[in-house]
Length: 310
Image (cartoon, rainbow, N blue to C red):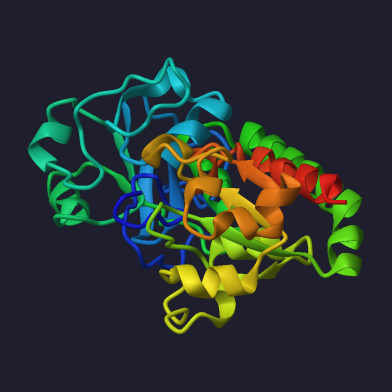
């Protein structure tokens, strides 16, 4: 994101990530059971939300959640998604904004469920005021948050079984990838730098992304930066050159036109070990900034990079 992207989005739906209060549990609003209900209750960050058991007009203002809805089989129930929801291709992309949500524009689609990852412009209250169910599912701060939110959306859309199947598959794939590469990363003491933009903004190990890298035992060169406390420091060129990371991951390929060929042209960068050894990895900006069903692809890109280090 430009401003600095969080894992919450190329969109950058806020630099600071908040913890998702999603529990994944739901009940029949009438008898407290989970079967044959006309409504279900989903525990989201905005509390217990009662939604139709199988909503037919869903709006998603979060690219990550849009991906999840289609991955669990709820795509046909989605009538509109935000302007940044560019995946999958069949998602009904509109001019609706997740950054500056307009309640009137949203209501015009006559939704029976709206999903957001940030409560901007007071959109949650505005929708609740007109009795439109809205789920606030914030950017994940750890893997369990991501899985919980996927299961929340499964429960809310009538696709709980598909959501569980998806999260089970994600967990298994991620565990397999990490198991194949983590020993090498730890034994070699490999370090890395994750680039959010060409202004050298990065992430520390406290962020969602940092935790993903941490599963491999990779050491983050941004952790000791002077302004690392907020989780998204802007590194100086001098600091980065001194750290000389073993691996460089670029998450600013689409947004900022950065790639492996561009790095040697930066002053001093041609001397970095990662540049000289070809250990510069070009990530998909979107996959690297979302906490949805394509997360295993990011993990695999990291694992493959570790395996290639000589």
